[in-house]
Amino acid sequence: MKKIYVGLLQTGTIASIAIKYLTHYKYSHVVLALDDSYKKLYSFGRKTFRNVFNAGFVTYGIENDFFAKKFYNTKCAIYEIEIEEAQYRKLVRILKRFEKNIKQYHYDFKGLFIRVFYEPKARENYFVCSQFVATVLSEAGIWHLPKPASKIRAKDFEKLENAQLIYEGKLLDINT
Image 1 (cartoon, rainbow, N blue to C red):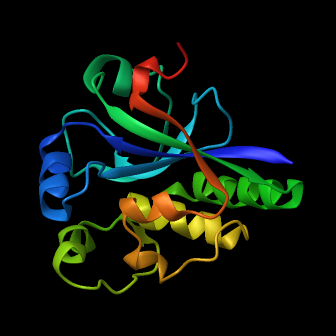
Image 2: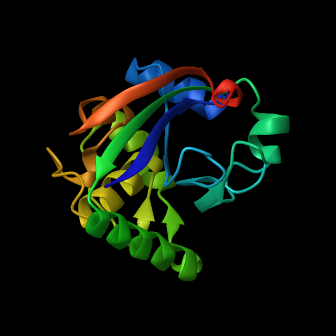
Image 3: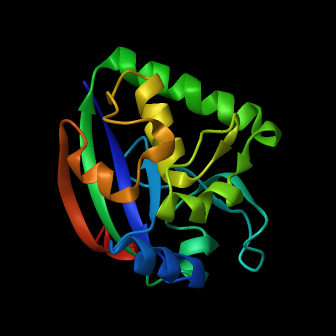
């Protein structure tokens, strides 16, 4: 058996505050980690501090500048999921595919705010964070989605099968 981690985050950016307001939910961003060091988080989001429109598939850790210097007040809820070894290996292969083909994946700006008001349609190779994490968990056989991945929101991860809430608080305090 292996353990993976899904994090629900609230960074405090203007976009995250707007999403929080529109969704009436305290978290606006979703990340995936393969271990409890959280040195590598997988998601879809901004690639640089200053340019919110430079976004797509990203990997970062809680110790890098993204959180350590810019978004150091990020709040989070971390869920631990125990999975089979075969599911873990498949998940790793899926994530490597995203890393290898990073340029073909795009952030779904069009669908971001549409999903607050309407049911968005999935577009091939376009993701928001919650849709990405739901997709990779589904493809790896870890989560049987209750609805299409394009309709999954951050709050839906609270109901993730076999998930245990193991931490809630400031992201940078998680390992203290």
